[in-house]
Image (cartoon, rainbow, N blue to C red; front, side):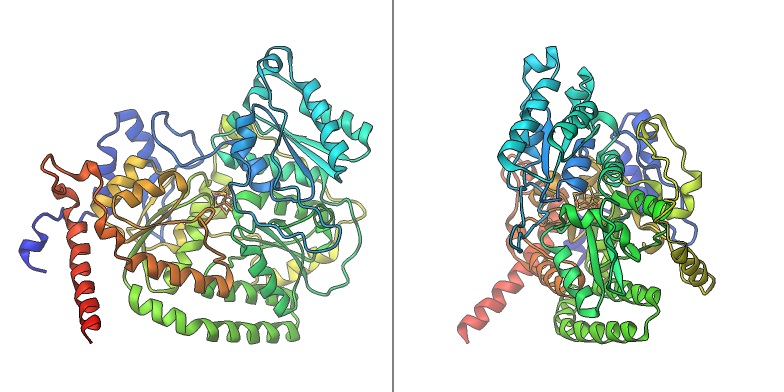
Length: 567
Ligand code: CFM
């Protein structure tokens, strides 16, 4: 590059300097709080990060509410129970099919209620005089129409404020209807984010569903896949891969799962956790009550998928299974290689930044690593310190008033069903170096001097784009268009827009190709949003470097296109 071309580029900032730039705009109290949530990483001496605390009012956050985490994320995907939102219609409406937790009703008699949005549609009258009567009526009406196996009720903010006892209504209707009816106190305001809703949902599913069916497993290698929600079909790809290897999934919590599968989940040999944030509670409680050990897996990224399969194989200690797993990995890797190589050649060295939820900002780094890309900054919306720093920090996490608000169930060993043989096996394997109940978190796997940002705000994303110029950002729908209007492609990593699946080897191929397309499409060079323009219509100098780079690429592309047209 000539000096002229670089003349308006801002100086390359260090992570510390970038952080300072981001904080400059804030009042001092806010800056002090945010500073603790923006950490310059050092994988060899993981620094402490501020997480799972309240968002400062006025900052534009990506977070959702507790109701969303409970009804929308963890329980919502169970497709053959009726989900009734007790609240004003908006809560039910906005949680209606917006998350792409896909479902197939394949067998005769399978039921799928997910197309319905059921709500008590609370009005002023219920807010003033109480909504329990209307809730009972709604449950009765829903039962009369659908005759479901179970009904689940979700409390929204006003329900908590006026004090409707959703649990008493559930107990009463359970008695009257003779089916399982249970409720969740998951009012939106109950926690600082959707994370509280995950915990509440885990408690409810554990108390009201898991363990209701003791039919023993006949398959020798059975697992549950916890924290996998079948977004864009991810769980289906994982299931197919595991089946190829000879591993049987008893239940997936809760991607494309039915009520019967969850009732029987406690009979599996092993719990594997995909999303640690949303479901670690369930794994812990199942281990305490039934003795089932758990391991962390990651089926996002080819290398990580292979690693996870091998870990499951090692747990079962069967030579036949391990050999089969190696065969499958070899086949899948061979099929993926040409795509991975082609995309790597085109994307190597490009820079990505990821700000997603409570798990994907970590997992999806592996897909970028697979194709030689670098992750310069990442962060979760609502994860806790253990998801960043690893579970070793659990004893040091201070429980604040907001977390104390969420019930911790007291779980004891089940006198009949506790598997002491599983505990023996776990101990033996541990003594041989196998690690259980482990999650090392995001920061251990990120490079030194990358910037880790918890609960990033729109202002901070804008600064990151202007000053560090990532080539692509993985994020959510709330900021996607802000990012794209700044000329940077944004891969929507929650519902994937219309894309996916991205899990395991087959999904990795989809992801690589899509990232390649997004990085190399020419549309970004045409984006000049109005606020970038000076009065005379020219682009503001601040964005000029990005625009210039893109224009250069564009000219090169045009030349190639013209040349090929001439030929
Ligand atoms: Fe777990 Fe999720 Fe996530 Fe999550 Fe979510 Fe989601 Fe997510 Mo959106 S359960 S923490 S609450 S992996 S809906 S499927 S994509 S924020 S990173």
